[in-house]
Length: 339
Image (cartoon, rainbow, N blue to C red; front, side, top):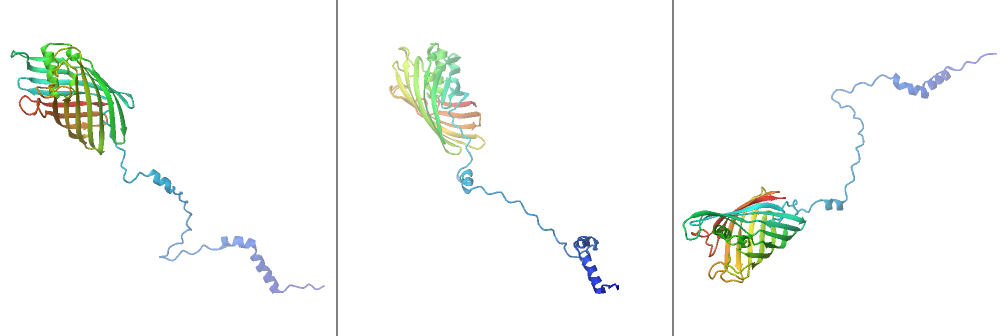
């Protein structure tokens, strides 16, 4: 039998088909030479950029507006009212020819019973030096104790305004001694203060008073203050007293002041005060029942420490005008700490 050979064209086609099979395609890249380098001056192809993380969702507009402070609202003010818990001492210095020098010294403490209720205690002393007593020319020192005073005050603060109202009562210790050095020291102590807070020095009286006032921060660092204190003086016996009467006496005292503080805590201002005996026309001298005073001062206030140095001047008779001979011009220091 004769064998038939496939034509050469068929054999070539079969070889080409086997070379282009999937296995051959898988091995083909490894058999190819590496691509030639790019021509000089050309940039290589960059890899495709990776996908950036999705941005966080924005806060709702209503929440953003609620958390942002209003454009006209500044930072919270560190201001605290003057009427708050603390302790300190007030010292006056009055000097006059033939009267020597007098130093009323009044330690005090103010304690917080509740967030709105304060209890205060004041214990006045007076030291007189180089003072002439009686009809002699002897100069001696005198020491007197005034009327210790306790009080309760209700205080409330709303934004930049503080209101307070309360009462006080004094124990009649100023009359426990009739000695001339004691009584002259106490009397000059009252003069040194231009008769303001005269309940500290009233001789054999029980002073009972009420008080009320306001403190307003009209702008950052600028303060306006005002107070009113009516007082009833009840005599303990029928003897002459500091206010020159043997009957009960009703008087009131007022004080208004303006003060400015800088951001550093230093500042200053001025105050005007008046004491008026309503029930007695000759309370302080013949035909005179009122006494006014004026006090410019410098001050310092921090979170815990306060200090004020002023010059208290009598404005009208019987103790003014302050720079005249024998009239009242007293240095006034008030220093202490809040707690």
